[in-house]
Length: 193
Image (tube, rainbow, N blue to C red; front, side, top):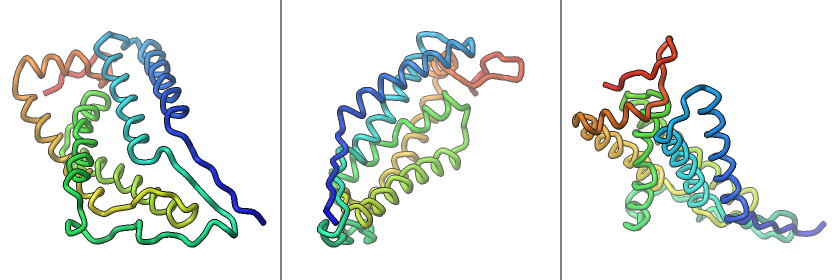
């Protein structure tokens, strides 16, 4: 049996994925009769944000398996909170999930803090569990870190609080309403309050 190596590259996957998401979002908005420049910009931002999260957390991804691949590196899975956190990583992981509240609000009409924070937590948990699996099963080179989980969740909370504060301003609220994807039962955009 031989050892297998595979490196999943970043740019050849991320750039086409971003373009496909742009095209699909435009087609879906057009099909639903919701295509406006503002909604299209929001959809494109959401797509490229998702691509950036994928790139920052998973790619490039060198993988190895087989008898000569070596032992798993469980030290890449960090369960010790705060004490092992690097300040730059905390900031970057917090910033990564800041847009979630605004995107969930505009695209899906989700307003509740609990749901936004839960979504931030579950997104981060999915990333960290995937990274841990890749470390243990396929000798991935990422780190699964409880500090990232806490920082991403904090980012969702902070993003929600900032967005909630900004929604108090009439001009900002009107701009959000003009971008909203949420629709009433009659097919009209829902006024955001």
